[in-house]
Length: 464
Ligand SMILES: NC(=O)c1ccc[n+]([C@@H]2O[C@H](COP(=O)([O-])OP(=O)(O)OC[C@H]3O[C@@H](n4cnc5c(N)ncnc54)[C@H](O)[C@@H]3O)[C@@H](O)[C@H]2O)c1
Image (cartoon, rainbow, N blue to C red; front, top):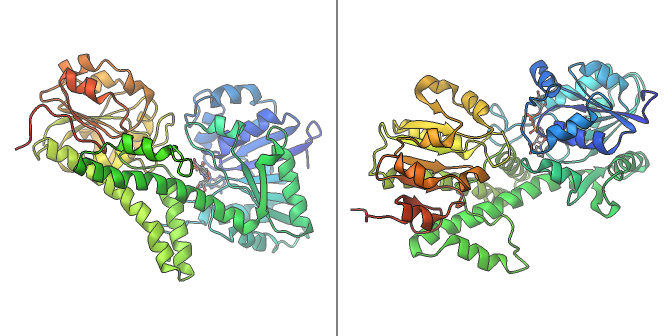
């Protein structure tokens, strides 16, 4: 039921890290469409209506300001949104299930199914439903089955359009995506619906980047893309452990292998381990899918990517402990960066949480610093009450600290005055660079005991 001023009404259910940026980009590029984003959380919707957005993403606020109130609207009124929409994008959360069958691996589809039932109950006209959340293969078919139960004679066509954006560079990724994937049933009505979605993206994306496929290939491709990306990280991290033993340098190895065009140089930075709401969840989803079909060797192969990641993060904490004479009790440790990566406020599955918890178990005095994620960090660590200190300013965080543990690769940390920091720290002053972004030689010359990843430490005294 398009508003007469607009060609089409697009609704997005779920105003999170995907729904917010992706629909803002559509609104920006397609002024002929009315775009409404709804969510069940009133405080989140309220924040989207201000300049203090619920998520930090570079360039997002500027884009929102261009369209908000013109063809971009935020609301909690899911029912009206559904009634008015021609096309419904669904980007609700699909976390890993924590209970019952498939607990710890399969996706929790409760939010997904609730939206299906909301649509079934409320819709008064035919609609195209666009699956934007990352979901197990065949979920689109299941949704269509639920929707076909309507007694109003309505027709719903479900297409899969997984999102490949990376948080921190979402606006750039959405403006110039490597590809947009749209899967549908390959019958007449499925292809017609798919083409309607293709036409939306064709407003700004070259046609050769708009890929179409069948429904299941589309759903599976999203899980596989994230699993391959995570696999690259675990592969280089596994080699970083070996580098530390044989006096090789992971950055030199990564550079040498990355020059091979068959391998390529992206995603070869060794680190404390990957975080974020997607990689682990999507790999485990793939693992569960394989197990369901009795493909146990395939499942074990992909599960090892997650295990390697956990190993890498725990290795980082072990290094801290060992370097600092096997006792962290009452030692002030500044954690530089709590976001799971740079340029986002998102802390879901961040390595920093694991590191902090382990440091707390050792009775360290932990100080968290981050330019954008302090609010989320406070929430994640609320069980510790006042035992954890939060200091947005890294200089204050590091003052009188025994060590700095750098977890997030914020540019800010590359340009700090480490001489000043060194002089205000306890000695020996340790720095553990979980992202290999600092100038290790320079830090060593200043006086730090420097522990990179995948490279021998630079230390002024030899351990016992
Ligand atoms: N975050 C990413 O970088 C990313 C990238 C690609 C794909 N994905 C996938 O996209 C989906 C969403 O991820 P996200 O990071 O945006 O999650 P999110 O938690 O940031 O946002 C989801 C939103 O959906 C809302 N919601 C849940 N049930 C609802 C309902 N019934 N009605 C209305 N709103 C409802 C929640 O309140 C929440 O605000 C997930 O499946 C995720 O795997 C995420």
